[in-house]
Figure 1 (cartoon, rainbow, N blue to C red):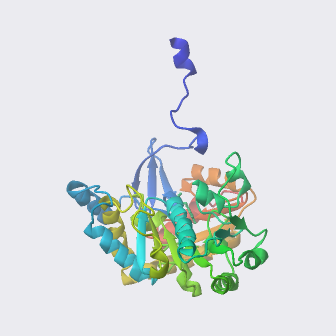
Figure 2: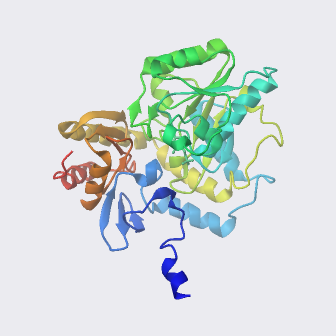
Figure 3: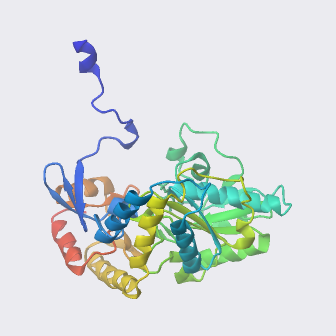
Length: 384
Ligand SMILES: *Cc1c(COP(=O)(O)O)cnc(C)c1O
């Protein structure tokens, strides 16, 4: 008996995340606190999720009130907050209809299904290829993974979903979109792919090529949406008119939620019974997301993101190479990103490594200039 206990694993969690360096127990605004009582300036925001900061009073109240009223009721029945959020997202995006799910991968999964079914419904039974971009990231479910061309993420999971095609390099993307293409999925800024801001002309040319071949343009705004880049959606800044937009991360400040937005003519391919989600659109997530929109849609909110973002950019450029981003989504290059992130953590700052030498900063959007100064001070002695 003693033997069995001594051989028991030290954790009951599966090992896909490795060993966490700290245990977080509390958050307040742009700070997190660990089990030892140490504070951290959080420039990860739960990976671009907690855009209003941790323990935001408005979101907390919305969650509390909704939990006392109704947490879940399924999509068999209507709910006013679901209708309300859908109408608001439709208005923000210029698209018509919304499907709710619970994560970014699920949103992209649904977008892929919607694109294929839209072609199928229009009678194009062979038009089923989904084109993705090198460096893209769209999630870890099998479908989303199939349009995420990162070989290490594929290891051991093949065969992936057929008819998913990625060009070898960005220059080859246009030729990859052919008459057999149902949709091309893009990010405006590749977050996981190293904080790479994609060239505006390339994205516009992709859109033109989609129109030419009858392919749908899916813009994955899972990370860039909800004000992260200084506009509500990143695609607004470059004049794209997507057919489908996916959202998740920042939409409900930490309550799991995902959304697929589409033009009516595309959305109508989702007829009754053709797709679904048990938890999608649940009142708790809808209440939290509506509370987030109440704040992000205030006229001064995005001005703040742009103002503090510009300040962060200027401070980063004093010190780092290849600083790129928009709004409050920034990346820069260091010699060893993993080591830099570890040293930052020891200095009381949380950042993420995206690639071997890229650091990503996605702080809460309520960040102030003084937090930028504190960030630069805390990392001052770390060698890049
Ligand atoms: C995080 C992310 C996803 C996946 O979202 P999950 O909620 O982790 O499934 C998809 N696309 C982009 C651009 C992301 O940043």
